[in-house]
Image (cartoon, rainbow, N blue to C red; front, side, top):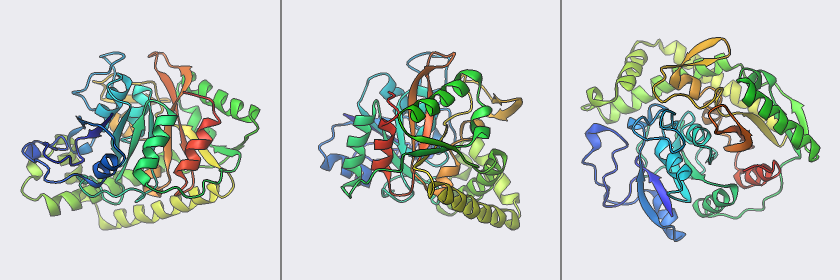
Length: 361
């Protein structure tokens, strides 16, 4: 039994992507992701709620099954909450800056953002085509691996990843103490299991966010203004604000950001040439209040959406597969600390096998 995010077409059903101007969009055919689920005899239960257009990370209309005051994350928040509430065994989300992994972390479930272009996006309403991914979410690793195998439809030789993990302390140390301690404990446990843990240097988070903001705003504005020119005033307020910023952005700033993206991608490739996987936090905070406008990250107050994608958006740009999984350790909210594992491109199955070595979930 699987739920599908409402930006993925499901034949005969209104698939609005959360946007007011698409509330009468009845899909005439299934999206490719749904066709693959049906071919594997999945039971499609229906659609899960998304943030409007998948622009944000809050999914405000969905209630967190553990605590109504908390955010379920987003934009695949409906999928994450439904899994946490036991309404399904699997769900489909989409991820452009973190929208599979962030709700997985907020809801204490598992989510896999595959390599870029690993799964087709036919029938999925775009956000930023150069960053958009679609992928599975589940309540445990075994189910996640089963759904991934059904979606990918391939069974290539699954040589294991190298028994080593890289981590950047600067990405971990800004987390609050419970999450920070849990992540270092996870590294200690990996070492005890014979997996080498090595410090690596990831791109500085401030630079990552600046690059992401420039590319995301410019490319989303270009796609939506070209493909939905008559509906731009009907997009959510945050999207209209970003579109305005993009219109005013010098082209040189965008070009500089794309060059930075290429440099960051090469940096991740170099790191993964020396380790099996990279370990980071998923979100730099405990699960936040659903009405919060800002989140404290270290000593700095950061915009809600930018804080939530702080640790995830880089891997949408680099295209590497990234898995969000809950640890056994708990945060003050009572929900698990979530860890992100990033692997080499095209090695999703091996990354899921690697995650089993952590003995979590």
